[in-house]
Length: 236
Image 1 (cartoon, rainbow, N blue to C red):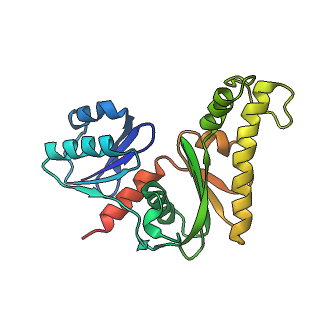
Image 2: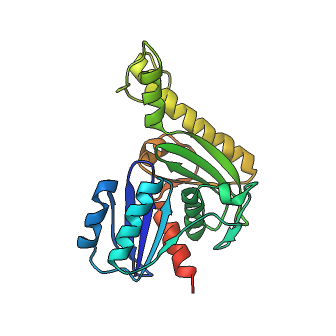
């Protein structure tokens, strides 16, 4: 019974996996992490965690693990894992959540793929047909783009408009601009891979972005958790 924890920038996502299926999945505010043990349908025998949220979340996860008297397997980026090769100049500097998402993507799709994580930040990573991670982009997420324009300019609002291909209002221009920027970056990375590639998207803004994408694409729920579960299952 594997408890997978993905501590991101805004919240913690969790999933309890029995080796074949998810028994429970959800998301919590970090302040609610101590309540998780009361809601899980079964106690975990293994706990694996990916943390990009800093020291407070690390301590909260350690406290949860102590409740079960289990050590935490801290998932970190390495040179190679689960048939994926890390092409970063310094492999250990790749965000652990991006590495988990790449492993999750490879477990689901054996051909070339563009792995897009749509959260506070958007990451767009290239995984070739041989399982080589060739690099990727980091850009502000949709909401961060919108809030940055509202907070750093004197005359632009926190936009509540709609996507329009050629906008004729300020709110629509901001909403559409953030989407165009993200979709354009995805399309550019598709060209860089030099072969047909499936685009796999996950995260809070995945559906919004996917609805405007062309080409083959699929929205995957909790891709980081899938990668963590797959990695943990591969351990002896």
